[in-house]
Length: 195
Image (cartoon, rainbow, N blue to C red; front, top):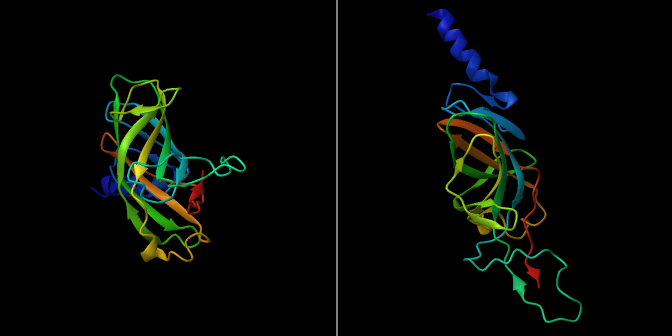
């Protein structure tokens, strides 16, 4: 009994490497990590890009800063908050089901959570654009996924200082019941862009 208990404790403490074994409890956030699905498919995951902006109500054009032609009449464009994942599945017998369990916005300096965001609109990159995605990852597949995020509560966080602060997104993924916690690079709040 003691040997079995020691093995469980050892597995629980080994999450810092970014590997999640047979436990559904995730370890600390990692930049790049991997997890093995119930069907035995090894899935590597990373946050490839993220934007923390505003709630756009479907009107985001995601236009890059500076794209407004000189002398043209420009209107402000809302930048929708989103997160993009790079997923790479190894060999296996069945697709892995991917879902985001949670997304938190954390202060980059001290790691404290400042808000929790909700996800919607899962999409996959098809080479010519993003299309709807059923969150299924086939074996031997590389996929770029994108999720819209709710806007952080900037008034609660501190609207006047939010553009100067640095943040990180902490994303908890579930791969067939196995969890992996990823962290983004440092992020800044996106300013409204004139286009």
